[in-house]
Image (cartoon, helix red, strand yellow):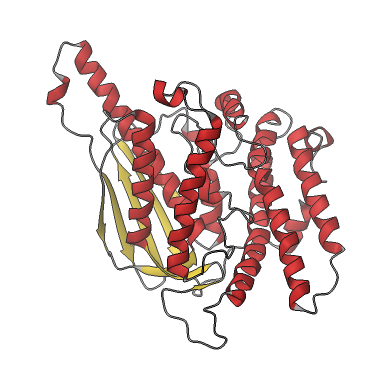
Length: 396
C-alpha cells in the first residue's frame, strides 16, 4: 500500500485498512516464542481478536477503490485489489487453520494418531466436499433469502442439478460456499426480476397473469475429471447488459460507483456482515423490522449453521471454529445480503478465491436470454496453487 500514489493511500478507507495491518504487524511482532500450550492459547486469543477486527477490510477496500477511481488507472487499481485480497486470503487461511487445529486438539473426541475418515476436517480443509450437496445447501439458502426479500407471492425458480452427482474433492468449505452462493444468488435474482417484468407487461396489456407458468429453472451441471471439477450454472435471466460487461470483473465500477458506495456505506462497521441491515425499499413487513431484530434473527441462523458444522466435524458444543462469535468469518455472511443491496464485488471477489486455489471462474452471457457461469475447481494436491509471490505481497 505504501507504493500507491499519496493521494490514494490517504483515502480514509484505505488509510484505515493500512492502520489495521500495521497494528496487526506490531501486535504479532511482540508475541513471545510459543513454548507451552498456555502460550498457544494466548496466541489464539490474539489471532481471534485480530480476525474480528479485520472483518471490515473488504468493504473498506472496496469503498476506497471506488472513491479513488479518478485518481489512478482502473487497471492498476484492480491489480492492487487482486494482490491485496490474495495476500489477505493467505493470512486468514493460515490464521484460521491454526485456530481450527488448536480447537481440534482440545476437543474431547480427539485422539492423536487416529485415522481420519473422508467426512473429517483437517483444520479448515474438508476432505470430501461433495459438489451436489454444496450446491443444494447454497441453493436452498439463496432461495429462502429471495423468498423473504421478494415476498411469499413471488415465484422463485427451482435449482436443478445433473451430471456427476458423486463428484467430491478436498476444499475449504467457506470459500466454496461463498463462490457458489454468489453465482446462484445472481442467477436467482436475474430470473425472478425478468419473470416479474414479464408478468407486469402482460398485466399492462390486459392479459391474465395467473395463467403464466413458473419462472424457468436454474440448471447446475457438475462435471468431474481426474484433475478438476467443473460446475456450470445456467440461467434464463436475460443476460448481462452490454454497458455492464466492461466492468464485470473490475472493483472500480465506472458509472455505478456512486450507488455502490451508498450500498457499501450500509455495511456495519464492526461485523461487516451484509445481512445485519435494515434496507430501505423493502416490503412493509421488513420495513417495520428493527435492526436489532434483524441481527437477532441472523444470530439464530448462525447458531443453527454452527450446530450443523459441529455435527459434521464432530466438535463438542463450546469449541470455537470458523463462523462462531469467537472470530467469525466474513465470507459466510456476504451472500446473505438482501437482493437489492448490490455491492459490485461478488463476481471479482469470487474469481480471486477461485484462482487462489488454482481454479477459474468465467461467464458467458447471451443478452436477452441468460448467462452460463463456469467454475473450475482443481483438486488440491494435483497442482501448485496460483499464489502471489512474496515479493508482490510485500509490495502492498
